[in-house]
Image (cartoon, rainbow, N blue to C red; front, side, top):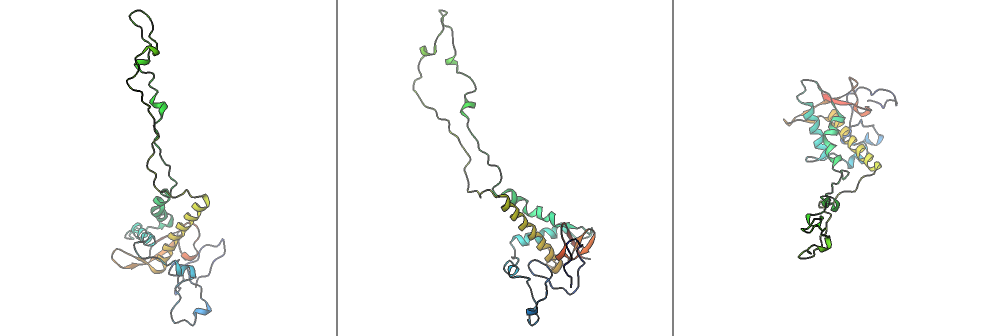
Length: 224
């Protein structure tokens, strides 16, 4: 069974006959309490038991299907990085979380009056050569008060802006969701469009590694 490497050591290769968690896809550590159980251990913790992958339609299923689509038929032995799927699945949700700029259309009274005075307010010479003052002009038929209103787009119920801490926690959660799906694919395979399960392997720096201990950027490809 693979053991956890030291901090700076590269991830080890996969081992045969290894049990994996059904939720996070990590290697299960054997416990004395499980040696006498008739059924094999399925989850590494109570948290993983509570957060089991949901069936379709769900985000977990969308992530797995994104891996399948990006991997293609496997002829090119393409390696799909976890970051690719993370961008494909969560880019839209990160821009629609209430942090987008709210555009407000204003009817500016000053802009409406920038055309200058009207013809009736301009000074005009009469036949006698005098100057016609504004007070001598004919009053308007009815005095009206024009109010320039500030109009805004209808405000929908938007989620409040996230703090930097909340934003970081959300991004870390989404990042781990993608890596969980990748590790589950390594351990149990992905379901293809034909309804069959196909195995993948974790690749980092050009070598096949144990996905449970892979750190930094890594990806998966179809197993030969």
